[in-house]
Image 1: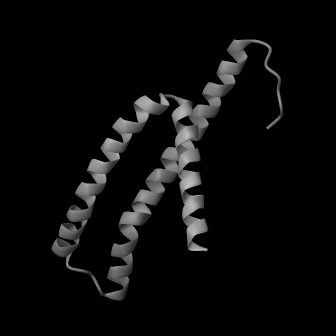
Image 2: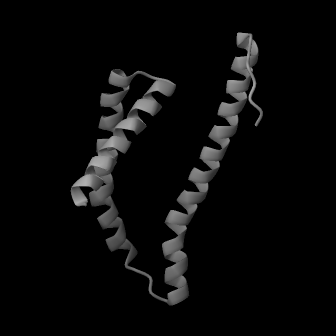
Length: 110
């Protein structure tokens, strides 16, 4: 990608819109692929090895964890969005906070 200096706002906005569309396409594609692999790989391996788990027990286990995770995800969104604001700013600040949290956890472990 060549480095351009944009003198007017229209060409800059056009570039940002094109970049956002490409980035979102890559993000959606990778999310779909990862979701299929995450959900499908255990079944493929289980069929291949002939060792399928009891699906009702697996569903009960997922529900016990999945419900708590879903509620906490919604609450986290509702709490952080007003504090950080919308748009690109929330992404940068939120990811910076997550990185700092992971760094502090790594330091404690070492």
